[in-house]
Length: 297
Image (tube, rainbow, N blue to C red; front, side, top):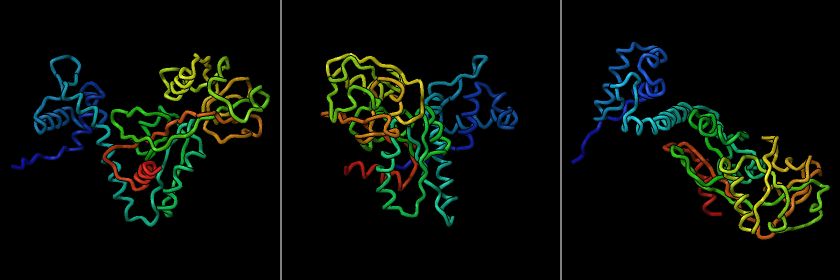
């Protein structure tokens, strides 16, 4: 027997989020321009429809119950997916297509991004694509707000309320200043970096790329000396321009940064993943192409 359940009211879900984030009905009602009584009645109706209590009202401050916390964890993504669907419906009759917007971290080079989107350019020639460099910490909110459609980063862990797939692996190389003692080498091994200062872009434990580099060096039999780059957001190879350090990069081998730095191949190079993040429960032909072309790679 099929049991009919009334679909979740998105307006009430939005009101629930407002109460939860404000930790009270008074402030939430003011933000929503509703009377406190109307807001309280709406939340009570939501609780009745779901068959669970969402707030513990026995304390001075309104607190989420276990059911409320579970709903809160997924509510933002669900509302964002609904807004995404509305945008798609509104854009459907338009003469010009809405751009597919990709955010990427500085660790994923523009050349890598272009290589990844080539199948999309070929399959969807009329679709405009916008590529934006962003810091990884801003991806989550940008996806929820619809400012980007996909995000590219170095990583493998899947965020709790986002969808993810590893769509490429790029060989790691190293960059050194043109005057560095290793600059004339065509290829080196990771073990040759023992005793060198390695420049990273985030502290251990806070950056997947840094942890990846540390793990690569440890597998080669040494504990690396690392320094966090004082300049953020510039091309990775730029980290060695004013020092004698080493930077792990994914640029092609040879001169770079106006010949001020040299990129050198690593023997048996470690492969650095490129992970794509997106909003679950959404549809995108361009995003699907990025995933399927990675499966055939």
